[in-house]
Length: 295
Image 1 (cartoon, one colour):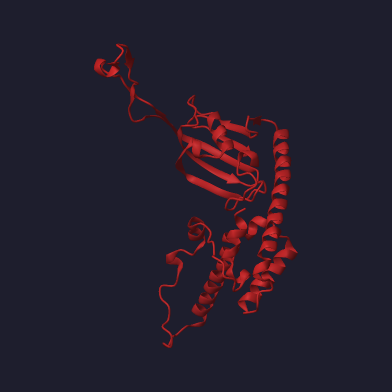
Image 2 (cartoon, helix red, strand yellow):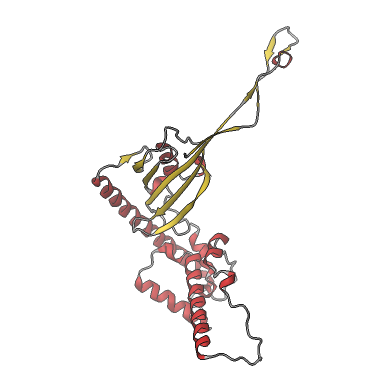
């Protein structure tokens, strides 16, 4: 389990304990921080006179409020709190703890209580994962009842909007796609509106299998159960046990193929001490690339 470790980024929650803070990945942090050009161009020097009219003061307060709310959001999202599925009462108590820490109050738990905290978070994560898996099964059943869906070996179901050309990706292909990934509640967790290029075997199992069902110019919707997605482990904005709902369009498929260099007669054989000959293996050249592109 990793998220309880990420939770320690909330240093206020753990007070003065001598623990390493395990920060969330930089990719998550940077995207959540305000853009550089959104920050004030300059800050008044301490003690320097300022002339702030009512309107600009209101605007500055609004901006400050936005930044502070954003800070709270970063601490919660990057700290992993969302992945535990805390209910309203549990969230209220957590907010009380954060407020107490900000007010300088003593942490109510001791270092020896950390094991109990970890057990609590592990159980919350397990409960949420099990709940998500049950909801995912219902979601897949409901989609299948609509008709037009096909089940794949991995347990995914797909609905093809456009088949594309006859070319198909393999596990070793390099594909250029646009996509949108949603959870069963309709919330988008990832999206690429501009085409991106990925290697098929780097994709999660369900998406890799689904990519082999359409060609260049094809478009489909694929629903992936957790067993062929991220399993019980939370991954960024994706809670453990989540069923994933992707819409994918293929723009290009590249097939790496191994070219071969034929050995000459001297390279092909070599006399052994006993008079027998043995062929040397053919020398493989660097992979070449065959490309199919949307017309």
